[in-house]
Amino acid sequence: MKLQSAFANRLAFHDGTRSDPLAIQLNYDDGSRLLLRCGGDGAGLIVDDRALDASADLGEYGRLVEEDVTQAICSDMVGRDIATVATLKMGAVRVGVQLTAPTGEVLCIWNYGDALHWGDAVALARCDWAAPLRLSCAIDGFSSAS
Image 1 (spheres, rainbow, N blue to C red):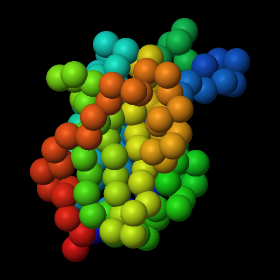
Image 2: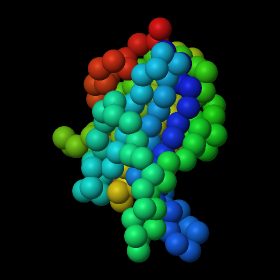
Image 3: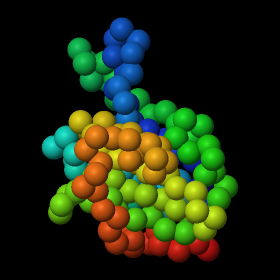
Image 4: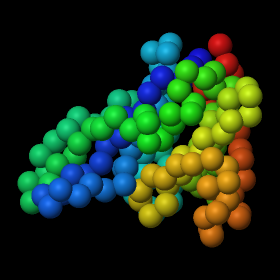
């Protein structure tokens, strides 16, 4: 399956600033999707196939918005087959995922401080807390190119 696009939920504050993504939805050319959400504990990552939350007014806190973040997050991976989507774990806690193309390109998405961050394996390795991370099992349904 080929990665097609990425959308994110962010908080849009009244002063015009936006939060880092709270959730990222990866969409594939076969119609499937992978939703990555902050676990609420500062590090954990929830992975499922739900859709992003719809935009909503949060009153004094601003708005929850849905934005296309394809160019910011995964422009180099769009249109490429994804060979594996594996879990990144710290101890027993899933903190991220690693998407790998058959040609070796890697995109990592991880939760740090209840905000999602992304980059290649080098960017992840630069995080001072990343040393104890280990690559774990592939995520069912996202483990082989089609």
